[in-house]
Each structure stands twice: as C-alpha cells, then as structure tokens.
Picture (cartoon, rainbow, N blue to C red):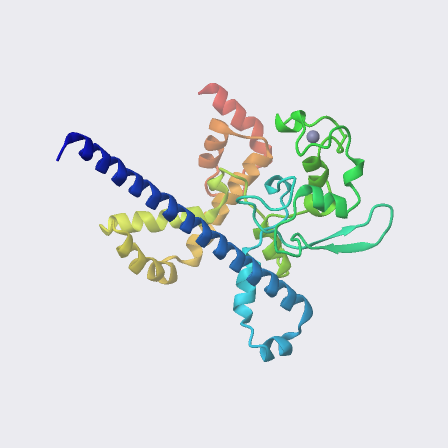
Length: 292
Ligand SMILES: [Zn+2]
C-alpha cells in the first residue's frame, strides 16, 4: 500500500473514533437529563399528593407512602449559600417548602422552593415573591465583594441578594437536620462540645470494649461485629457505666472551676474517689502545681 493511502486510512479511523466518542457523550448527557426530569416529576407529584390527599385517597390511588417519603427526604433544608441567582443550575439541590411573614403585615405565606416545572428557584425569584428584591441596594448582586471575602459590613443586610435571603427569619432559624428531626419527635437534643471526648462517657465504654477485644486477640472487624453485642449486653455492668459517668462529671466540675491543662489532670488524679473536684481545694491545687 502506498504510504499516502496508509496515512489517509489512519486519519479516517481517528475521525471515526472521535465521532463515536462525541456521540457516546451526547447519549450520556441525554440519559442524565431524562433521569433528572424523571426525578423532578416524581418529586413534584409526591409533594402535590402529600399536600392535597388524605391517607385514604393516597391508598385508593395506590401511592406508596414510603416512596413519597423517600422523595421528600431527598429535599434539603433551607441554605441560601447553595442557591444561584437565577432558577435552577447544575448541582443545585431541591429545598423544602417554607413559610414566611409578608413584609409589613402579619400574614404568614407558604412558599414552595420549586417553580411549576420542578426547577429549584433561584435567590432572585424567592426574593421577588417576598417583595424584597427591590429593596436591594446598588447593582443587585448575588454576592457583594465584602460578603465574598467573609467580611459582611455591619447591620446592612441589603448589600447583596444572598445575605438578604440568609437573614430572613425562616432561613436564619433553619436548624441542623439532626436537631430538627429529634426535636420534631418531641425530644430535646444536647450536643457535647467538639473535641472533648473526656466529657462523653460512651467514649470510655468504647475504649473498654476495644481493650477487651485486644486482650482476647481479636483484631478483625468481622470478629468485632460478632463480639460487640454480647459484650455490651453482658459484660458492661451498670456499676462500670456509673463509674465512667462520674469520671466525666468530675472533668466537668474541673472545667467549671476554671482548671485546665496540667492543673486539671492533677486534680482529676488527686480527687479520684470524689464525685466532683472540691471548690475549696482550688488554692491547694494551684500551690501543689507551683511547687512541682
Ligand atoms: Zn453582601
């Protein structure tokens, strides 16, 4: 075969492969879009059903409550930072519906966070519906330079759209999902301070379990799974739990007295048998540590 012909065939092959790749990409894109639309339609239908129909009607229409619940669970809480200025956008999550008080009145209005087509509303649409968009100052930006740098200026919440929206009562009061779920079920939730495992006695129970497993020569995760339930059920006594919780309370009293670092460690050791670090002994603790 003459060399020219060979070159030609090579370039034809390369073009063919390239075209195939482009077609493949387009097909993937179309498929992705189709799936997105499917989810949106499903989601809108689920919301409508939840709002409009009672349980019996839902049963009659053969609607799986679990499915409706799953779709609603996909929606996230209100976070202004995740929204674009305009409606929709790539990777913008769907948000749950909310209620707000109309400007200058006491009227509470429900606001859906999606347009009629199932697209997530942008900051502009949300503010326009609340009659707040025109109150923005200057060029009506999504994010002003000060807010972008993390230094919002004083009390002026009308500097940019995102700040104005995030300062609205419903967005501001948005609790973290765990707190909202637990409190919604009628319980109260108290968080431990971050990075202070010495205040959480469950950490000590876990430490005890790990030490026990190491002593038994069990180092595999599967072995741990088999052993952990019997250990928790039978081998962690109530007196052990009381002991470790007292230990945590002793730490708490130490922090409340203003002790920390070596002073706190010293006091924890010295008053091991006590329920709390005695406040009268504070002077003594300081003296002891100064001497050493
Ligand atoms: Zn701003």
